Image (cartoon, rainbow, N blue to C red; front, side, top):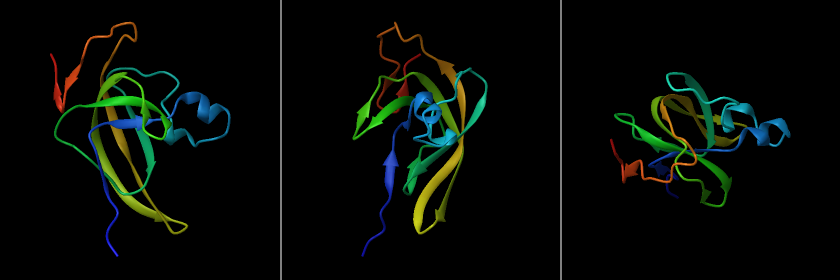
Length: 116
């Protein structure tokens, strides 16, 4: 038996519509308004590890590895693992550094390095 852990180079959350339709809790989804400089909570199933020393892409996920282009640059400010009803979760907070214009198709990251 091993330890199941996932290393994530980005933070992938569901659309706010998933929360409005009652399919997800708020922390699993993007906030209604994503503003630079604000901090938001997140919740992910599983034991996840994020890079804490710099900015990472924020993406929208529809599940099964289906991800949007980065919609923002964020910095994870805290992440904690816990067990609820026998299942492991990761919760934390992220600070929005920069929100990207979705009509802009230029690259914002090269691997883990933010393109300035």
